[in-house]
Amino acid sequence: MKLDLLLTNADVITMDPRRPSATRLGIWQGRVVGLDEEVAGLAAAEVLDLGGATVTPGFIDAHCHTTWFGLGLGELDVSGARGLNQLYALLEAGMAADGTAAGGTAAPAAVPGWLLATGFSQQQHGGAFPDIAVLDRITGDRPLFMRHNSGHMAVVNTAALRLAGADQASFADPDGGVIVRDDAGRPTGLVQETAQQLIQQLILPYSTEAIEAALDRATRYYAAEGITSFTEAGIGGGWIGHSPVELAAYQRAASAGRLHARAQLMPVLDVLHPLEGKHPGGAAQAGLDLGMASGFGDDLLSLGPAKVFLDGSLLGETAAVSHEYCSHGGTDNTGNTGYFQADPAVLRDNIEAAYAAGWSIAAHAIGDRAVDLALDIITGCARRFGPRAVPNRIEHASMTRPDQLDRLAAAGIAVTPQSSFFHEGGDGMTASLGPERTGWAYRASSFLSAGVILAGSSDRPVADGNVLRGMQAFVDRRTSSGALFGNATERLTPRQALAAYTTGAAAATGAAQAKGSLEPGKLADFTVLSGSPLTAERIDALEVLATAVGGRFTHQALPDRPAGTAAALHH
Image (cartoon, rainbow, N blue to C red; front, side):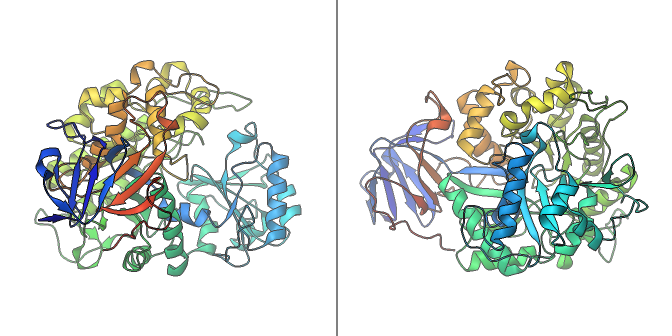
């Protein structure tokens, strides 16, 4: 037998408790075939001496928005603005550039005639939102859609509202959303939750060509950060999808070699439709044509759970919580406990119909009241229709009360709390929740102690997607002010933090048998680092030297490999 690739002189962290470390790793036909003595004496088409560099299983981002991120790389990026004057200046520059991405890189307009911007957060502007009068002065009759970095709200101008027919005070808010207005009833330009769709329906759908190009850009970026797999948390519809044929764009990207990481896709529950026939138990079913459901696909591209939004966001103070948000910074939150995206009875019926058709469920539940609803519905579905091979999940599980931990573990529900929120949003969330409840926010160690499956993820581009910084955040839990976010007891050890983005994420995505650790028979997805995340003084100071998917390099910056020799990912 001749190996395709043999890594030698490496510090291999396998994440396999039966064999936690090795110095040699053999790869054949895209899979790990052995370590150390198991590959002794075997010839290889390529032998790569890593000079002591560390090899870990490839990083898995279990919840991100890749199409959105890739499109944003070609749009006006306003995330660097600090203060509204800087924001206005960037928008003026964007108007002048017209078709040029931030930084001066030429990019074809994904939606001609619109000014599309990404990365806005009021946290970067002292809690202030743009004045719609100033936006109108800058943009004139050109419609503006500037997405908030949470994804749960957006800033628009009067031209966009007029096109949607929503510029009048008499226009009614949609179910599950708000067009924010001033005391005189005039729109301020802020649209929250489902109200975004009033504007988005004027923009969507993006072309398959635009999405394919976005996936190419985004997954090249992922490769440079050591990411080998990801879960796209919502495609096909709702305010988070970009096209009703988004899956086709993914397939095209994969066939053309433009998908540089393995992808699991979550269709938004909205795109499922009633199916003929009944479940043997008499339940109505909702799904996709031909009965496709969670798990359909292969190692490169597959369908995950159906994604359903139960509530909003903590930063936007729209998440459904059991106790009202604290008033702070001039914001009066008296009586504000957030809200659900739809009537709970309707949500239950829709989720049950999808589950009956074979879908696992990924419920976006931020507030603890939403977590209660998710637990009730998912456990009820499991009792009635049985378990699912792809785990059910609660996305974010941002506020979890102590009494909810054992219920999550008993139900086998995976959670995806994003450590990437600690730095930029931690201080703001602390102000919203108050000291008594901040300890419930974005738990980590207590999930593991209770036996809950914990998956590392970023929610990119809502927050920073760099995995090494995410691991560091799980370990130190520091906000941008340097304060500790939540309780110190929720900190993870470096090994637990690495596990979140490898074995934990693999388990949460239903792929633990194929990836997440480096052991014989599993996919040869790995990341080469400049040092060990288990012993480094700062995990976020490490460098990604190389990334490989199925044993083929998607990124390389190894000193002994000339630039341009990295192999493309083939399928």
